[in-house]
Image (cartoon, rainbow, N blue to C red; front, side, top):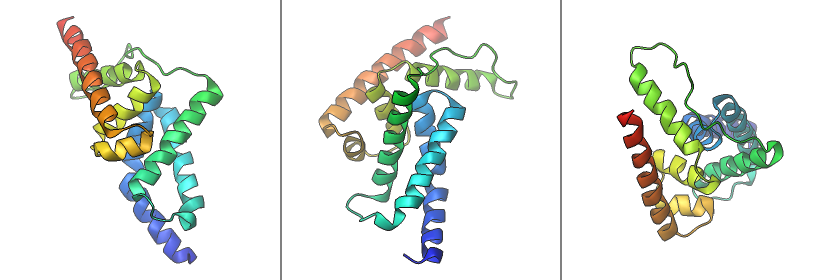
Amino acid sequence: MATHNKQMEFDSIYNAYWQKIYRVCCGYLGDPDWAKDVTQDTFIAVWNNLGNFRNEASVSTWIYRIAVNNCLRQLERSKRLPKSEVPEQISENHEPQIEAKIAFLYACIGALKEIDRIVISLELEDIKQAEIASIVGISEANVRVRIHRIKEKLTEKFKRYDGD
């Protein structure tokens, strides 16, 4: 692949997927700074392997799979658990209630089992369930069941959160 074409293709992929990959990593790892590092590692791998991509899967499936594998490797290396508490101080903003709820959502996601964290993070990015199944390596039916159960757990936690 010519360097100019590779750069143009990479720029297009980067612009289309950076925010999505970052949010998936953030939801999975529970730490924004750590998620930025893993997102960066993901795009380094995309750049390094762009010439080898054979279109056997969609570009999005390929990139999400790289991101998921990077998240798993980071968790294995560090043995660091994601934070599962809502920050005591939410930065002042025009919408502090919304920020607090988003922080609580990510804290709840961070407390889920690893596979459930990645499944719900991908679902929140509007990735099709068939693609989630391909990325994670489970059946589409299993993805649907997991999403249903995860949503029930999160709904229950939010009912308790709003009740406080």
